[in-house]
Length: 250
Image 1 (cartoon, helix red, strand yellow):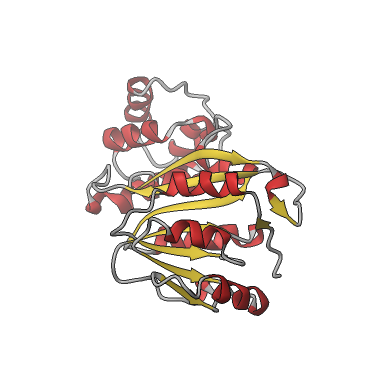
Image 2: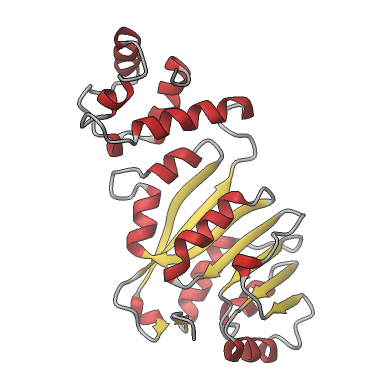
């Protein structure tokens, strides 16, 4: 196995499927299918399942477990090297935790992806979803198009081998209508990148290098942000409000 902790608890499988909510018309892409325990549960309600498993020994077990399921296509290949489907699809996976960042990047870059339900380290899921009360650069950058949330926790005892930490069910949903017009997204991202430079010790100090002081102060008052607010404590909705008030950096 390639650094993967396989899920063996049926209750945990049911929780993941409950968050993913696959329907009879849905195409599900599963990453890290292992021996197919989650695959079979997804196939029970999904229209089709493309199940990726790169480990050749696990892939053989997966193919045997799903041989009688007519709606499952087992692919002994690396999902990270595959071309995303041209049609809308939802991604589900108990992914190898060492590859979490790369899988998430692939999700964000796939224009036909509608949602992703990922089993990750609990700390990662909490961090990306703002569950610690702080927000990361990646979450804020993608927020106009992607909604992030922590949708549950899975104890480490649900896996074999047993990892050192619990897991979180991280849910990403691509918004049907982005919160900003497409033409505004590059400017919004420039604002966020500038804010996360960390220069000056606060969001206001970082932005002040590229915005007139009066305009910026007024925007902070309107969004109820103190001038000394650290960048990580600014909510995504406040970033959007700031952008609408001050526009892209000049």
